[in-house]
Image (cartoon, rainbow, N blue to C red; front, side, top):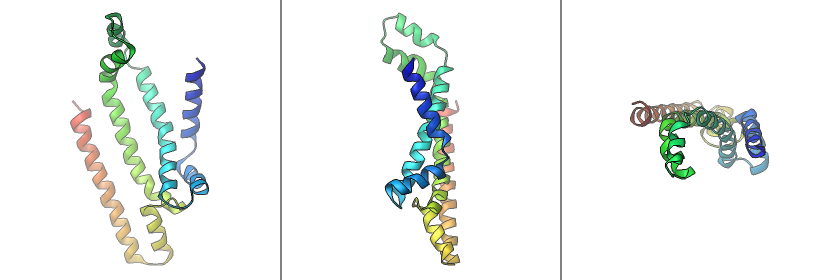
Length: 161
């Protein structure tokens, strides 16, 4: 009773703080560079995915897992064969969606010193190097399009049936 409430509180706290704020805090804690951006995205994404996964699992029908338990299966077996198959497409869809969001957000986090292409773009723009800035923007566009294509392929292969 206490552990689920604490877990919910932690997940709410992680997702309540926007990625840019996490990035600013992580730059202070870990210094300039991609480590700060990675930590910021990981913290926020853990909160968002934790909440989405918890709600999906809570709303999954309990009858298949209960039937496995009544037939002598353990809790892990009941989860793997009774609950997970019903909720797996939704969990994967959430995971892919957040991956796409994180790729786009990583470009923005560089503006606060959290590394990556965003930081390259910031430097190029601040030095008035338009050709280099255009190249970085083109690289970001290609990256986002590639991630979108890969995500669509994964959804078609594993989610949409």
